[in-house]
Image 1 (cartoon, rainbow, N blue to C red):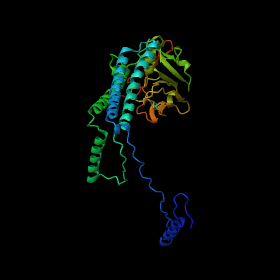
Image 2 (image 1 turned 135 degrees about the horizontal axis):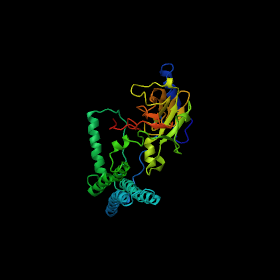
Image 3 (image 1 turned 60 degrees about the horizontal axis):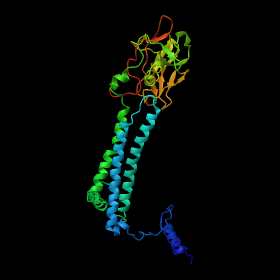
Image 4 (image 1 turned 180 degrees about the vertical axis):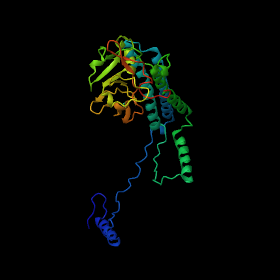
Length: 357
Ligand code: FES
């Protein structure tokens, strides 16, 4: 009789039972062979030093809450560093110091919470092995009662309510940890300025010339040939101290189409000049530069998430996640033949936001 080298089970038994199944089942029934893998059971329990020695248990507890307190210190450190080492304009050294000290604080806060939690789990929480049998996922009364029981058991085994210092220090660390993020994100907002007003206004105003980006050379209407596209900035932008912030709002794309290809809505008849139109280059999805102009179809493509805008229909969205057309810059030609703005944009440029009118 053949035997399996590892299990010692008789192979013939399995094969004969398989044959039985085959014989008794309907034609086409799969042959099912018994799963011969044995349940190895739990490994022998080995008590930890903290299970055997109350002194070591107390020491582990001290280590855990010290780590959580350390995390609080890290979070507070990061907030203090944000204030103590501000980023100054044109001072790369200040950026380095700011990043260094905030980074140290956040790293300390995160590491201490992580190490503390692992140490708590490994040295103090109950380590009894348990078996969770699979059962149907249904919200029955018995399930709810069992869930409550599990919570109680987890509470008892982890000592969450019993070890108040550990619990409170962990809660404190978790509350303190997001504080640096709040402070850092607040720092991204405009300082002492109404953000709605700030986002609603750009450098464009009546009579401001359209100039080439980045040279700042003014553009004549005669320079813009049919099918061409120009990346445009307002005249004087390069002399501005905050030119990058201004450019992020005022960047424009200039294109010339056949006038008969443009579908102009009522009230916008004077916003273009002989087929020359100007649209904000800032995508209305999340603000990437819409830099790709497809000359044949007159579509503008945003490379970030593939939003497409149809220039023949006032830059309406024809594909992608953007939700509104690119704002149009009203333009005209001055006495010297240069293209100038008629006014600022009539709506905020870039991504939509709550207070956008
Ligand atoms: S930023 Fe343009 S499609 Fe997302």
